[in-house]
Length: 218
Image 1 (cartoon, rainbow, N blue to C red):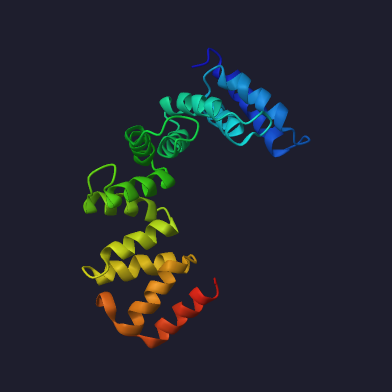
Image 2 (cartoon, one colour; image 1 turned 90 degrees about the vertical axis):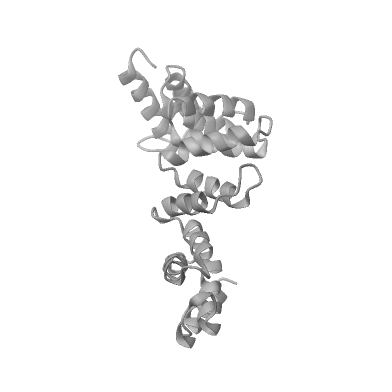
């Protein structure tokens, strides 16, 4: 950590202003300069933002190795966003060797801190059962965590997981996702209301409504 956290925070905030063009002309090179100053003092948010800059080549030449180095520093300090993107990069082999054990480790760390994308990702890992044992209970647990934060994809997947064995929960979560414009959820609601499948009541009015919503997205 920085010996002078106030200074590091001020440097980070200055970098953020240059990055956003807030009160001054947008200048990504100056943004990364000040992010680096703060990051080198151990300021976690600056380390994460600097990682993003290197990952996308914003204000600096793109360098995935450096990006992951800064993500790792921030992740080790508890940055949930850094933990999530580090998990993703390990899962894809983006700038470092693919390592699903490390990917799941970092996804879980981030998910436990409420990072939605990590919660959704670890739920899919438990559902697919390829890199960790299939576990429906944990699948639903993590999809629920993300769904309760409003993540439409997780709401849809959670609803699908309840089809056939808990129609009320299936209908509830599919509707939540559909209301946010999740086309897959809209189509499934239309199908189930049309033929009364998965324990849904037949309702042609609702079937037509959700089919029309899905068709609008084609």
